[in-house]
Structure formats: C-alpha cells, structure tokens
Image 1 (cartoon, one colour):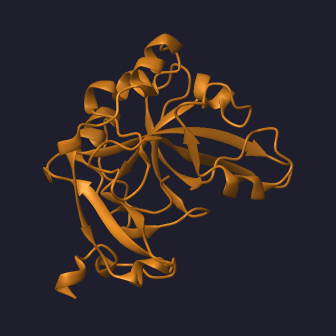
Image 2: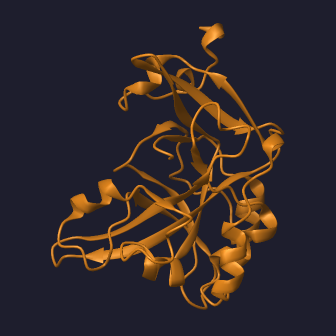
Length: 224
C-alpha cells in the first residue's frame, strides 16, 4: 500500500505539461497522511490539465459520509476497473499524483521499521497513478483522490508486497486524458516500474507520528 508520502518539490516536467509554474500556495511537505490535502494534476473532459489541492482518500460521488474516504486511500490496480468505489473514476477521472518520495514499513518482530523510497536518479520525476472524484452532500463540496497500488517489484519485495503504481512521463498524457481508450489504460496498469528506478534508506520512527513534519522525516537514520 501507500499510506504516507512526501512532496517537497513539483518537477519541472509536470509543470511544463500543465503549462504554468509552481503555485504560490505550494509548501514543502515531508509527511503527507490520509485525510490531508496534496497537489494533484487532473483533466476535466476537453479542458487543459490543471494542478489542484485535493483531499487524500477518495469519496465517491454517491457516498453519504465523508469518512468513507479513509478506506479508499489506495486502489488496487488488479481490481480498480470493477470495484464500485473506483469504477467510474477509473473510466473518467484519472489523475497524476506528484511526489518526492514515499514511506513504507518493514515488519521486524513485533514492530515495524520505516523506510523512505525516492528515485535513484534525483532528476527523475516521481509520479503516482491516481483517481479523483467530486463529492457534494449539500453542505460540503470536496474533491478527493486515491493512489493506485500494484504488486511490489523485486526491489520493493523485501520491505512490502505492494507499492504505488509509478508512471513514467511517456504515459502521463494518456493517463490524464478522459478520452483515452480503456484498453490503453489497462496496458499502463500492467507496467510496474523498473527495479532500478527507486532507492531506499531506513528513517527514524519520528515519521510514524503524522503530526511530525520537515526534513527529519526522510533523513537517513544513521545521520541522526
């Protein structure tokens, strides 16, 4: 799964795709958790892609309660096309979720050790495949998103059996465009990132607390 990530910079390649610069309201984040907002690139019908801050935890348009989003922070690539929670968003409302890195925890006896994952080549953009949704219950209107996960590649397996579905730049426009044939989208879902794309290191349990923020969350544990 993907339950925590960092976004301390939005890559120039994402901004070029969207056609504008970094939003003035952008702030570095090192410990983004479910139910918090993060920046997402999305495209509505024939409009140009835009960058918006969305709530993490997808809330289907038909949901009666906002709290359902906490059970939908991730969507499995293997079943996203069929599950009622995600099916319509998968067909019409796909998005790109930019990140600088993400965290995963390795089981160690009765505890868990946190690790931070980021691109081996620091110049490479890290972008997750996501879905977004509009929700309105009459009193509140909210846009939300979920991150799609896939089976872990060989690099990830020693830490966890799932990982975010990472999209290379050549797939961004197809993934965003509502008109892309679902047969093309299915092919993208079947493309896990190469084993050499990511690097990782152990970080301090400081990151476990969602109220903690800043560079120390992602700092290698041996540098504390």
